[in-house]
Image (cartoon, rainbow, N blue to C red; front, top):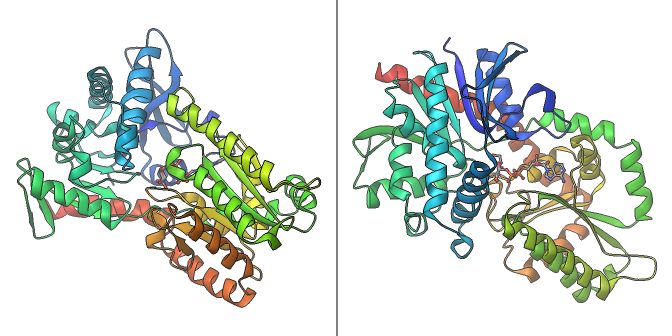
Length: 460
Ligand code: ADQ
């Protein structure tokens, strides 16, 4: 069995693996454990003089190799190109894109540095799996160093069509790099379509026998929707339901119905519109006054990026305005908590919430939608209201699917969800759970790695 080498911007080191670690880290780790693999990425530290070689540690049968950035590199590569250029662009938000040659150069330099380190660590029959938008230039850099290994790339966030993607001055550089992979994976069909459209209409490529030909290479691309560890979330929720924090939450509701939103504080998540929708519901349906509580938990994220700081202020102002308008002396409709909670506590909160409100304006998948469903009680499950622009909406048609740009529609869906009979809730939940179990986290990494392995054998 070949060794698996995973490369991602961040590495979840055993010592930092807090109660928060979830999603990607868990999925990647289980695959790495089976292959006794190597994980390379940024340590999370910035230092004035990064070491010339990665710091390597061995733990639990795995090897972790981490590199540091200088503060200036972190600023231009991570805050700059990754999160002020690529992130808004790939989430269809051209108006928010900040571009500069300095950001782009830093991104290319860091990707090249990852390649330098990897070239020294990798063995000829290793399988390399590169993750996400921070490392789109890496496959090209690896081939430029003569690596012949199987290379797979998975994009966790959306890929817009060429009309948007080509606004990026480096679109050709990044796509040429992805073309150096053997397999490129996306969350949904529209993302894959965007990639194929680029190959056909921008790169002058062709689609043949299930492969894509572009920039002189033949590669495969496919859809691999990421899932969650359903059993883990269910267990956490069952255990947490009767624990202190969940009890405190339930007691504080005094019998009111709980609506919950949980996100990283990010403009792609649609938090502002969601708070507005709750306000709209209270305006249009006065009977909900003093009968519902909306808890919005937003984890601080990318706080060095200006747009994220201004979003935080806008959320505070919007929550304040809705509360100012609708609150009563013994009740506030919106509770906004700007912090991280342990996964276990989140699981308990999901379980006691009658409605999960997940309304991103654009999202690769959205794990919260899946976590909320997995945490429900089979006999009395809550309702998921889900944006059609979350990748998860493609699989989760038992949710109430909404357009997050239409505040009135979101308000109506909340109303419908809160009035839904227990029979309908159970029916919908059963269907959603069947999908979650079928497409769980293990299936995601297994199917990606199987596809990457098979195609190489086919070519050999
Ligand atoms: P994210 O944009 O980070 O992920 P998401 O998929 O929702 O978005 O995952 C967020 C994770 O963080 C969830 O596991 C959630 O429980 C956790 N989380 C959120 N708020 C928290 C809080 N306040 N405290 C503690 N934990 C919190 C990117 C893409 C997504 C894609 C994933 C995985 O943007 O579209 O689904 O990668 O591929």
